[in-house]
Image 1 (spheres, rainbow, N blue to C red):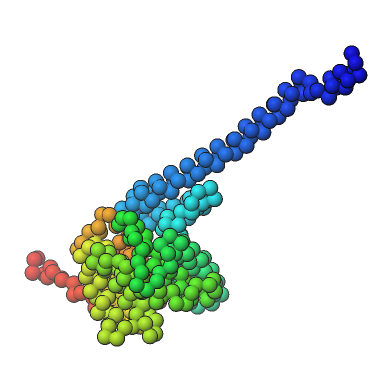
Image 2 (tube, helix red, strand yellow):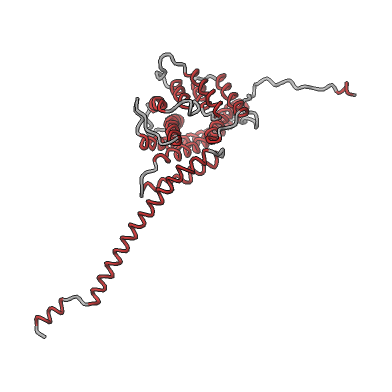
Length: 354
């Protein structure tokens, strides 16, 4: 063998070396392929989960009356469903419902702490009352954060509300979620104020929401858009248009909600009455709600919304009863008050029978 042939044989890769190179290349290709396949599977799963949740889970929940289960579902599944935004499009529309409901969970806990503080104050237990108030404010701060997240996702999906402009809606559920997003904005501001914290909720959010309600059909949505708008008029100085009376509008909205079996307007009416310190009107709203729920069954498609309205009306009633009696509204007595005149009890003359 010549020197040139020897050097060439030394430089030529061996068969085993070629095999090792091919094996390494194949492993690398497979590994990178697994990553791509995983990403594709995650994206597909995320798209399916988002679509199923919007088209089936949310409508199913709206037809139920179990608020506690709905609360648990939103708090438990929000991180899972929102995490799919890392591998596919952000589920902004679904997030409106998730964070609005989760905010309601935190606010419900805040109401319980408030009742505890009122009971402690009546018992002259100052330290216990103060601790309950601190817990209430913490819960309200969390509620404000969640409501504000719902509002931000609302704006991402539908666009920031602009005067004279309305988004296009694909279906009735899309319109409802738009309304829910507007409510979340107001709730965020209200919870932030009550918590005495600052999480950055815009102070003009009320007027923004009031304008945006004009994108929704008032009669179709049980008087809720007008009720929401009238509540803003009643609560924010300078917001009331000339010639308007917010409480006349709220009365009309109540009639529409009662007829439709979705009495959410009663909640807005009660909030506006509370803001004006009009206790007589507040009592009338609570009585009307109690009577309406007895007379008209809830709309089957929107039972969850109606149940939520009842829960909030009961919470307002409980606060009034606790302040004045030391206990909540007695079972079966929503719409009555501690100082109502007792009905005369009919008695029977037993002597006459004997």
